[in-house]
Image (cartoon, rainbow over all chains, first blue to last red; front, top):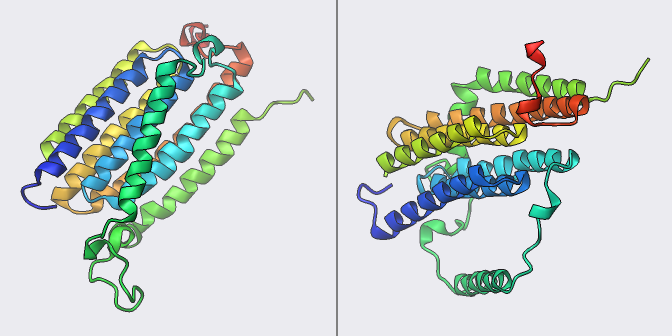
Length: 181
Length: 97
């Protein structure tokens, strides 16, 4: 991170921060559990963007994959399994403004892709010609986290596997429907 | 940017606490706990810029514990729902006897 971040960096930092706060406020005020869960996913995506901006690329990636992709799916699955979402509050966007907004967002994303397709990236963002043997001196996004994880904190990492195994067995044992003998 | 990140983390943690205290739906309360864990993760990442990459390693562990907690907690909620057909905490007062 440069010592004095530029205006571009600052504007996006505040943008993602304010979006995270707004999404969190919407999350705690929604009545429907499904809407709340989707707003929480929005909070997590904004936090992932902040992680990437703070040079924690690997944490940003697993924030999207694990939190937004796995944990929130489990939450939504349980909400829908128990049929807790109130159907009258979960109406699809049928209004004209919703469609206009969706179309505008789609056009903006399309324009972004068109611009990105013809952008010339900075050399440090390009894949090196010989990535295996002539790699960069730093260990990359994953290696910086993996190095201390598998050396200093190896015991904690191995204990994590026991924790996950206990959680899986416990979840199945608790959630199992007991059959009358 | 680190003070701003810490302030944002505090705000998110406060919002999560408010949600835990005000909501009645057990699943939404679980999601508020996840929001609080996320706020703490933001603190870890922000301070890892000052004190080295160990903070990011800790975030990995926090996410693992969060996943385990979500699995077990939701299983408990399903069991409670099977017992009483509700997840509203007002109606779950078995410990009162």
